[in-house]
Picture 1 (spheres, rainbow, N blue to C red):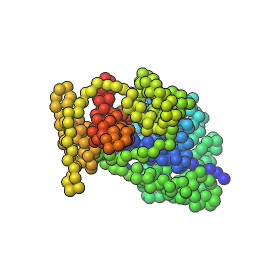
Picture 2: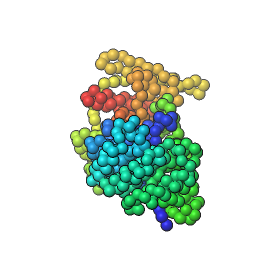
Picture 3: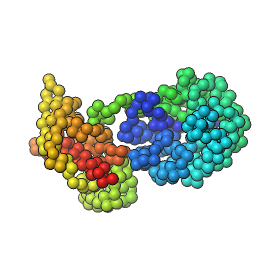
Length: 472
């Protein structure tokens, strides 16, 4: 039976149109969930050639163990190399070249005529093929383009090395049966199409995206673009249900079982549908305190640093050496440490910087009949600064009060609390991870009081951000 792959485009969707703001951490969590659900391909879309973009690709490439990670490269040869440098560490990397083929879109988006687009597409595909075994060409807006031109472009892309060809009904102007005929024409008339995987992307403008995808499968499509959290393309949950219920009728098979999909579906939808700007540092919640990853004395520096970079840290060579030396000393005594303990080492040992902000004092008022209020007093360059904020608990209010002083919001990537001594006056250790421009900065605080350790950890991480921004 013919195999059908699902390619999830949740992270590549136009989030502005969908009124959804996905933070860096949400993107990583969604990618990890999709990987655990054994979705064959996870698409990141077109990533800008920025530090944050490169960190996102590298973090997803590290987090995803089973699925293929696909990134769109654009038509700038320097951007192709930039993307590949970040993506090449993925277990299964894929480079994607996307071009809108309708006349209006070509002139509006690329400012080029059809005759100029064909060699540009072929050259970019060939460049990608020289780097990666998996190269996909996506013919955007293909159903509104001249079929003869579409045919010529697809054949050129195949000759240049594209192993996956995807055609898109971007405008959603075709009914399922029309789209089926379009796919059948491609299968019949495009030279070389039998030697590649044929994919489709269906717009849900008529509410018929799932039906159009089914008809495309019946006409020979073997890869379907789906989305876990948005409504303008084929539904992941809907397509999984169809493939599980009607695989025999469609004469296809899929690697995604309904059992492992349903186990994670609700959490994926929750992550994808979190909307609006952050109103609290704890908008994303606190991560599970458990950690399946453990490290022993047998782990090399390369292995340990790769795991750290996969979390979003971008350490200097000196910090890498310092962190691994501290890791080696601790693991020789404990025999094994988990990922959270490794992050404490990173927070404690890496990027030791001057204190731009110093904590003078803080006051927190809370109770079962009043809102929690935090009043934080900081100092910078001898100048006193203070902020007051309501919050959902003492730590939340304190972090919001600091944000009031700063006048900006940093994404709270993670928040960990651990007891490091026992008894009534037990010391608590807090690690706060803040993300700025995609990069993670962690701070550590120790105190007998949770709020004190949390505030100190936040300021410690903040000072690292300030130092980096002022230095660069």
